[in-house]
Image (cartoon, rainbow, N blue to C red; front, top):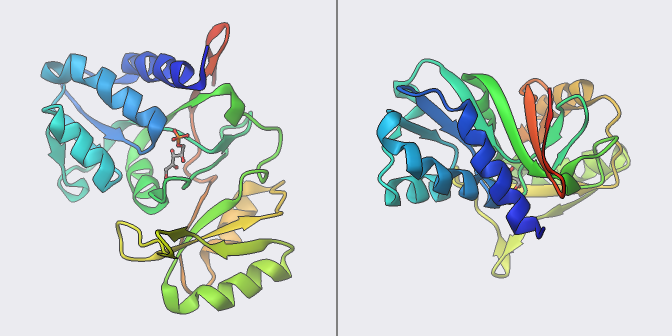
Length: 222
Ligand code: 5RP
């Protein structure tokens, strides 16, 4: 199976976690796009979605799925999103699509995070994928030096020759060369640095369930 087919497989499998009659939390990325497409088949059985990005909102609305403001909803029973890396405990690196801040917000208001990913995303220890960090632009260079002091190499993410601007109007730095043995401690430390909006290590908002697309079918890790 191709990576695209594995993504479609888990996107479809995630439908079993959607609670009929409720609003579902929806992440961002190519795997989530497969889930959104599958969700259209049950759009008449859900109230709608809370979305984690402009891109997902546009895709949901194009398929006729109502999108609610996160402030209009107290709690969601489930949030479905992809990951750039996930370990066997449900800790993740996210933000490859630059949507990490809204993803963490919607994950935080959800009782259960269901991660959907192809098997290439499963790792023993987080850190092979550069950690995305959303930052306030005026703090970028100081934060790059702080990551260097901890052994990482940080670069500003570019798009069309300019610093990428997130849905929240901020920048992203991608930090490579880190081995994140203690994701909770890492998230706690970096989140406190002035100028950091969101660090793309999801330890406090870890996945409760991971649906992993493999050549043999969907493997569920709980
Ligand atoms: C976006 C994300 C995505 O969930 C992550 O990058 C995985 O994306 P894909 O499903 O395209 O591999 O965190 O900010």
